[in-house]
Length: 108
Image 1 (cartoon, rainbow, N blue to C red):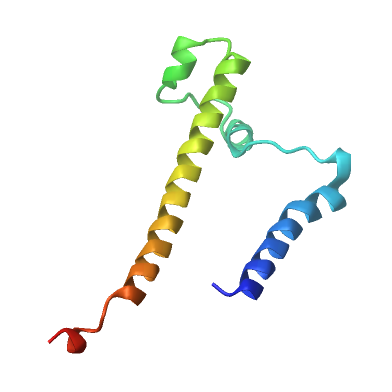
Image 2 (image 1 turned 120 degrees about the horizontal axis):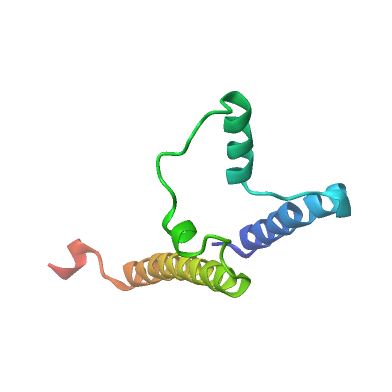
């Protein structure tokens, strides 16, 4: 990639991260979609009963301990970044080695 493209991408990333913080400020409430879905289902059908209980709720009926929740989140983030970084490295190496290979016509 060109240096100017990388600079533009980094600037866009910074804007995507910073703009919500600036405009929403400290009053913002960031919640998960699971809680919103549960509230909507309860509003639409108060007698609704889920078909199953998640495994973690069976093991930890009072909710996950904070340390375990943080650990699982960190493992998920590490796995995701590993996959993304592997993909970027693979594409960069593939492009590098394609440039080094002679054309088919030149070898024969």
